[in-house]
Image (cartoon, rainbow, N blue to C red):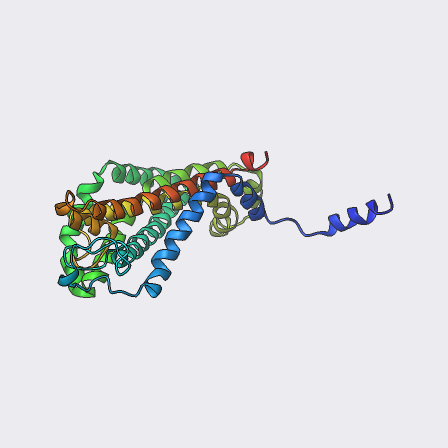
Length: 306
């Protein structure tokens, strides 16, 4: 009994527990999310650190070793030009994931900006939501093909073939995939505007900029983070589709979609050349989606409190 009072005093003066620890505790209970996080981390480590260990040039052709099977010298074999498929798979993953993450950041920025402005300022709501509906009504793939066809050559001449194509694909995917984030954020902001602490802050004359940055944005981070995980998967699939159609990066610049495109003609003779990048894309998208599901459950306070 004598130890109870000091323990209560210690608990009373202990700093409050960070809510992100509660989020992590809930996230750990989602086995699929943990497995997805482990797979995605393994893919990232492979494409980022792997080229330093397996230093073979993914673009170097060696016609004497073309169309070889799996061996110690080439763990995944070689393609029709003698290029090492393992090195090309890692290099392609680095480009595809970089495109996915960069396009996701651009999409999140645009979607959050439009959603916050539309939800907080009533006079801007109608205009911004009609613009969102307009973008949603546009056919995505034909629009992307048109943008790539019109702007790939000017950007390639200005920044180089690889960098120019990277900027173009990131911009094209980012500006055509922000609409769902904007709708989600707008709905959250409309709900937050009626909360007591927001109304109290308004009553004391808090300016709109400070209201948004201190009270609105921190409370819409959970849907934004979930949209981020789903946006990475969507961007990777879109980039792979463009590369598969031959409208992505240059032929000698590997991406997962480009590897699929190069292997289509020889799919019956060498099916592994199609299976390997296809499995890499599927594992990446599936793992990211599982992480998004886990984050959605962990960031929901109703579930976290169970």
